Image 1: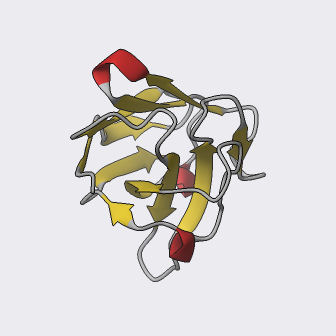
Image 2 (image 1 turned 30 degrees about the vertical axis):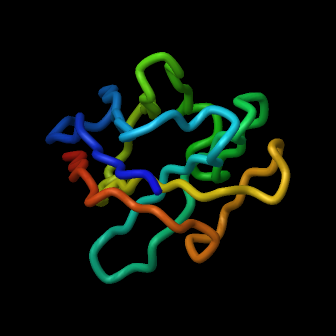
Length: 127
């Protein structure tokens, strides 16, 4: 079992950058595949970025490819989401998620594949 706590959200202007953090209660390297999801008002929760358990493979949603970067500092049990060139449509609550993968190089994109979730952090981008 792992507890996840997100931080780093806020109110920014379009074009600005923001870095989100997700601190886990235990080591995640080689144990959990990690993901960032977001949910805007009235919309379903959607995949943003993911990192395989072995820390090698990353995946991104088409809408954030080239603007967002997922990374981790294993010694600190912390996952990051670096967000650049933010757009109004990036406004959402951002969630960190984790689950035990079938294979260490897999990255899941479906929210239903993840077992553990943080409470989320609000990101608001003004146009």
